[in-house]
Length: 384
Image (cartoon, rainbow, N blue to C red; front, side, top):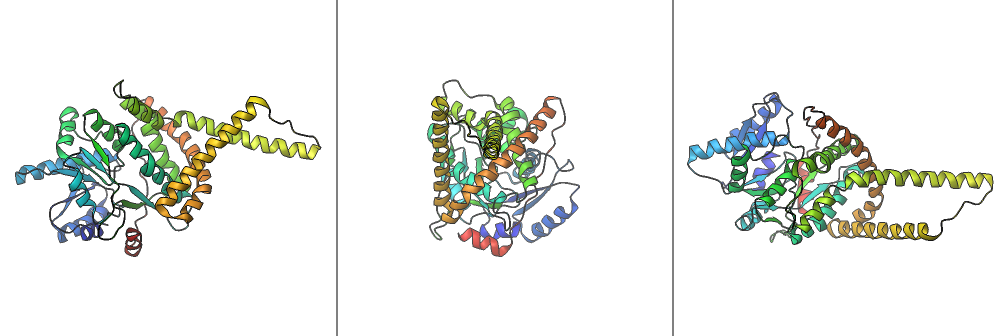
């Protein structure tokens, strides 16, 4: 992936800082080989054995950058964040350069790749990012609300990271489960403007976005979603609180971020009610009796909720279809059920993570195992 990134980003106006752990000799050796071939790659070995939080690793990279800046007598303009499995776009740095001068941070769209044989589990990320980056983030930007960063495909001005580091000793909070989400809100509190940029390459016509595989198995997806839920809706609520009282748009969007605390119990009860309704109908059929129908306000409420469900599903299909075509749009309908099942399982795990933190337990980083795309798949997907 390092070689693929270097090939897509020609020129010498940047350096790639790659964080590794001292107890991961294989990764150190792999990065060292590439660093020996290309001076743009910096191998950084952390002081703490892994796995640690992503923020802890990023702080190690930050300190390495400071040392290099001191030695060179020059400072970088911005810092771009990426995960090891990301397939970067050739025009990415040009987009960042065009926007970072007038904004504190720039976020590009994230396009999940659907893993072969995992149309439902890995595919549901495609749907959720199509909604989040096709509708939610643009709305947040228009409202002037704090814009969470994705942790990949985002550029942050170096002077803003320095301001954060001056306040708390490091730009990234090593005690956070979702440092990228919190960083976006922190930048908003500093008064920085964050831009979500949806741009198309003038040469290829492709969307300038980050492409990567997400978890393809149920257990891996549940672990990742649990960390997101615990870090945003539970522990993150304690850590970030609310914005200024006059920022009504920001309050609304933060409430949406944290709605999982109410949505998951309601969703669980709804599925239980649906199952019991089916069982009741079957028993009435066997007994030869007529089930009691719904009347009055109960029927009106269910009809209204059904209308909202249809509207939400239509928006999901529309957004997925606009970004990925009608086949994926059709798949997004059954994938909504898969997404709900994953969310329900993840909510239980997130609750236990949060309870452990409240009891003073150590922060445990549940590392997500990622699939790295092959060269042929990279080329095919990036051109899409």
